[in-house]
Figure 1 (cartoon, rainbow, N blue to C red):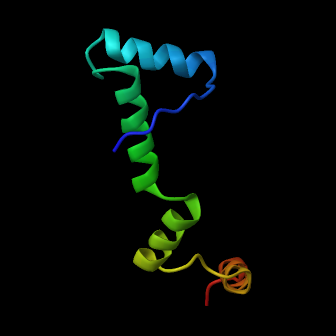
Figure 2: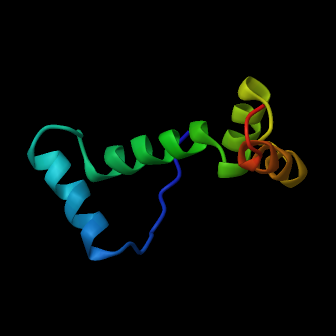
Length: 78
């Protein structure tokens, strides 16, 4: 099923979509927007991406841990 929409976009975005069609990178302006929307949909939100990164690498260190490391690095070596 397809739904026809009327949207307003900045001139630069419209120019890029038309350029993609001229250069053969998209079959149509609608196709270009469809591809862009699919990329956006699959990418999720920034919060989703950050949560995935935290799951993979662990959360960033706490302020307390960073302060402890700073103190340890500032102390003279034994």
